[in-house]
Length: 469
Image 1 (tube, rainbow, N blue to C red):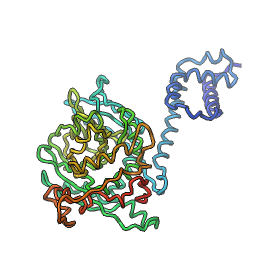
Image 2 (image 1 turned 90 degrees about the horizontal axis):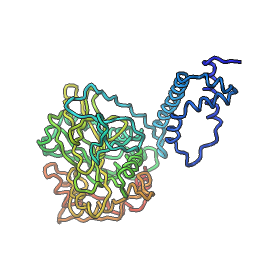
Image 3 (image 1 turned 60 degrees about the horizontal axis):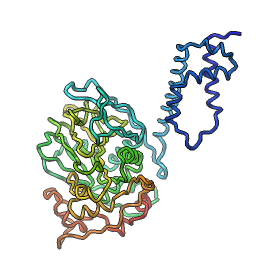
Image 4 (image 1 turned 120 degrees about the vertical axis):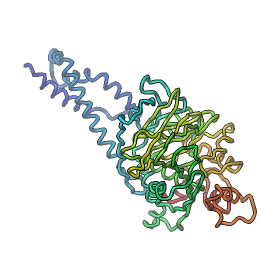
């Protein structure tokens, strides 16, 4: 009895799915990506085997030509992609373990290539899996842009978690309005005091009776050479820094650290600082490097948090020539040793828009790069000098190690560290001054609580136990 090609394909698809459903449980060392590659190249063979399993004769399977096989292959691929989209949506709405909080999936930002400029090069921007790290490549020929310019796939919860935190804390409102309503002059700075939304929730739920802790953030506007109204918002003491680490832990940043560490061949990683860059208009991007001569072991990881729909590409990265890129919602941009980059020119003032990126400094601390790391002046915390060097050293290898056993989720903190005031007569009410660029705080670090004392910090104890979240 002969069968039509349509009925053959229908039965083949059903039989193929039945074959998959009846398969043995996956082995522990099963490699999903390798299996997918094999699946794509062996679809035709799989369909023919499915036909034979369903009872068709060999000559009937030979009647199925490549057109039909291609159609069936695409149908199977489409179904696989549909299931993966459902899976990703469910994963992105999963409640955080322990606190019961759920974060909505991040909306995928549409990249409008019509806003690309012919005066800039452009990069390959295919989607990446969470933690997947790839050197940036030029779109026109696939060549590598720079040895320490990398795209890294973002965990689905990372951006929603960061954004929810700064919104609940009150910082997001400040960042979106300050540049219009109360902007700083170039070179000026200002201080803000916040309390943790995570601690407030713990108190509301009765799971904590601790007194609310206050911590400090700083905002400064770089000098006129930046040709923009850019403002930098950064953690300004150790407690606010530790808070930022809890945010990243909840957002799944461990995947990013592992991807970077493995791709760049590092021994370990720790997070040095956590902050944001906000801008409404930029006449000319100031091209610069964040790190030089650090043996490829220090980086700035940039993640888009807020961007006007009308806006164009947000970042310039320079290799043999300048290229422009959107941050997008799928990947962050890692810039390291000698990577020249800058803010892409923009003007969002007509619709009161603000572009916000999260800046996360990472390093693999060694004796050779310690002095350079401790001398960084990008943010007010950690301060510079010998005290900073001592503190940076206590952070070494804290959040990821190629040997395993280190993570943000199970973070046990830095090594023991205590600090004293460098001058006599320090007064707490003088710790936050807008006119001295933090010099008083740096001379009165103990009085100003720039660092936590070890009695409260509890080195060696899991952070979620110390802070309650």
